[in-house]
Length: 102
Length: 102
Image 1: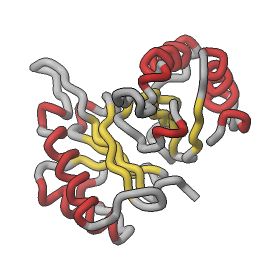
Image 2: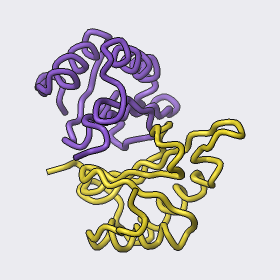
Image 3: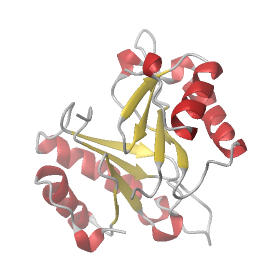
Image 4: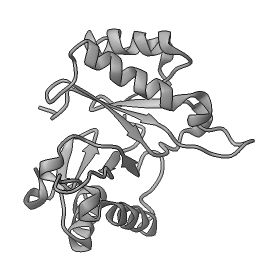
C-alpha cells in the first residue's frame, strides 16, 4: 500500500528562451491550483493525494508535464480546465484522462 | 512500463527551527551526490534512473526523506554511505535497503 494513493509531481523547471520549459507554460500557477483543488475536495493527506513541486523531470519538449505515482501516468496540460479534469477524473475517481496522457 | 525504471524524489524543503526539515539534514547535498553517482554509474536516463529535487513530501518528522517510484519505497538517510547503499543496492541492483526504509 502506497503512502499516498496518488502522488503528483509538477515539473516547475525554468530554462531560458528559446529552450522549452515547464515554467514557461505556467506550471507554477497550475501546481498551486491543483493543490488548492485537492484541498477543497478534501482529498489531501496520507492514503489520499499529495501534490508536489518538482525540479526538471527531463521531458521538456513535451511540457508542461506532471507525473502521477505509483501508477506512473504522465500528463501534459494547458489550462485550469485540464487540471480540473485530471483532479476529478484521475485523482478523485481513479479514471485516467487519456486525451492528456503523454 | 514506467518512463523511468526508478524515479527518485528527494525532499529539499526548509523550515525554520525548532521545526524539523529535510534541508536541515543536508538533503540538498545528498540529492546532488545521488545524482552524480547515478551519472557516474551510467544509470541515468529514460528507462533507467532519474534523481529529482522535490518540495515538501510532508513526512518532516521522519526526515530527511526520499521516495522511489513506481515502487513507492520511502527512505531516510544520514550520510553518503547511506546514499551509496541505496544507489548500488536498490537503484542499480533492484534490492530494497530494509535498514533505511521508513
